[in-house]
Image (cartoon, rainbow, N blue to C red; front, top):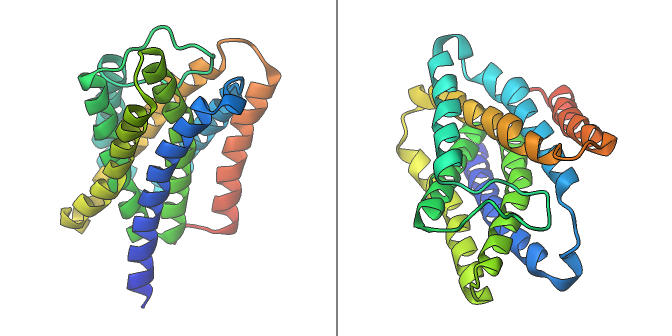
Length: 239
């Protein structure tokens, strides 16, 4: 019974991440939301991603033995983010980004990896799974908003925009399904890789974007994201 509950939570986490993809696009395109500045959400997501990596994932990843995978996760997503992927954008316009096949491929790979991470997190501890899911969802909202705005500025019809966002979202459950073929003994190494991914995205992508203009509320939002993760760990220790 407990095993069935864990499997349900694993796929539920992946589905929630997929819904966040589509919902964030709707938020960006909705007339009442166009003036919404996602800077504080980006800052909160940065605090969550980095804190989940340091306080939740790394202790479960036997990081002393898997530090090479931590570094690989950081470097791989550095290359992807610079060459292929979309940055979260805290401004109303994202002038430096384009949306092409290579970018969509980068987003797809990121979502598959995150789907795998959600499942492995729940396999180790329900609280770790919840922490990873929360970090993925919060990070996905500003990225999904950015993606939708870029496609809108490129002249994409709304149906096409939501088709692409829906396809990207579907890759979270696909990643969850792929994880069933991954041997349990490799889970710590994969977690270390995902920690490297989270640290890069949080510290090198989201934080600089949030801090394009100095603002104490941005700093507060980052700290709030970290405090949320620490509170989750304090009240629900990872077994």
